[in-house]
Length: 171
Image (cartoon, rainbow, N blue to C red; front, side):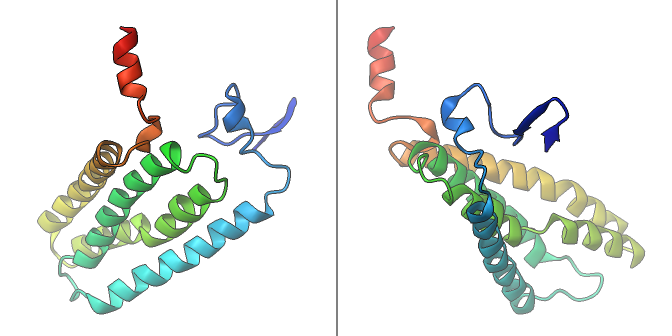
């Protein structure tokens, strides 16, 4: 996005006051676009494979879509903890894994279509459960993925090795 009086491109998850974040904004976005595209193609192919392997009957509960969205959200939490803490200097990891691969893997648009079809086929109770349950489970999965990764992997979640001990020593 370009602002009228500011020719700098704006990325919503980049804080322009932080030099490391500013370095993400490249005047040559082709490698980032290629990383997102390649990841998205792989993620969509994986999702399609699961949809084929676990089809649901018309009016039945779409377990494959639910599982894809929750598992993808869990992995997004893991990836973001690892990328911000361990792989922070690798410019194409987050676009490839989080935006591309897991963005292509998860399918919240299909989730909405599934809800509509469940209502149309006379299953409003199941549709409501799915409508409310999917985003709750997805957000919980992101939180669990981030928390577990940050706890298990040294440096994940933006913590440096020994940062907790140093912070304790300074208190």
